[in-house]
Figure 1: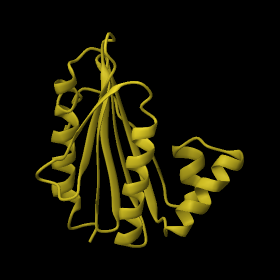
Figure 2: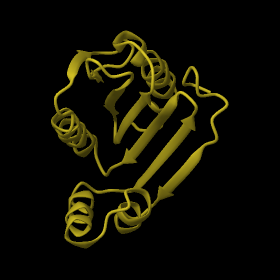
Figure 3: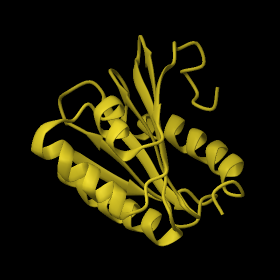
Amino acid sequence: DDLPGFAAAKIKLRSATSATRYVKVVLGESGREGRNEVAKLKHKGFQEGVQELLPSRQGEALSLALVFGSARAAKQELKTSISEGLKAQRKVVIKRFTVAAIPGSFGFSAFEAGHSGGAANVLFSTGRCFLLIGNSLHTSTQEQLSVAPIAGATAVYQRVKSLCA
């Protein structure tokens, strides 16, 4: 309900309270890559993770939340996720932004010229939690891409900031 345009989407929810299960069930990773990710999460004091996918006719939205053993670990995850998220955007136009209502937030939209659609994400940490709210839309302008992630991230932040302290 927090993401404009996705209220009617059927939610696909996955969660785990162990790093091993999170990597296997939520991320779908296995083998060496999966073991490396499990080790990283355990090192950061992973406690819980949840992923929510919202497919719709216009595209899909995603929310992801991870709870770590400390605020420092959550900030480290934010820094790593920003770097990895930007690197994953091949040859596209990236527009960076912040969300005024969320201290330390980082947002970006990725739009490929000549193609319909793109993606936008808002990443932030608060206390022991790291969160990502994003979407991928089939047809949209670059400016329209960030509307739902900003609204969703703002609503989620208001609910979790005291829970993650």
